[in-house]
Length: 198
Image (cartoon, rainbow, N blue to C red; front, side, top):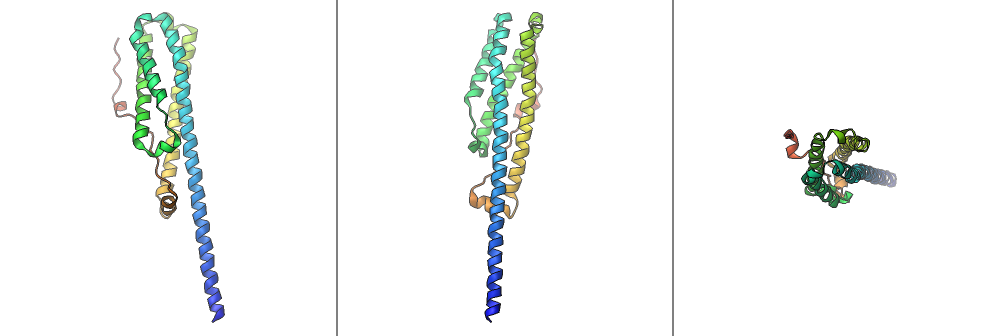
């Protein structure tokens, strides 16, 4: 009888140890995925900051050639200020409305930059200016980096959200406070092609 009781206790103890080990493993995986999302978000913000840093130089270069285009230049400067004023720390990535506000500000800045570059088409001497060409090239490269980093961020969010939602890991996620994160989505107006007017 004592041997049977010891065997049952040993099995129960092994099951308890296995369950605790599994819970620790799932928790550690969730922490790694959460950190990966945060790192990817930091890189998205990094490339947005690079774009914001290039804008004053681009605006100053254009000002020298296109002083009558003050409205477009002011619009770009204002959009940059709005986009730079909205900070989204990693803790806010679970709030879709906060991410949407950040996206809207960045979309407005992108639209203002597009209008500025269309305006530049009116000034052939500006288009051949070396400083402008270099700034324009850097800005185009930065826009490509933004797209790449947003894609990487969304991939990290997908992997994290999948792990948070899959059973039985969702139990540990719920107990430890891991919540789904919002994806970086295109603005609704992105489906409408821009209108270019000269």
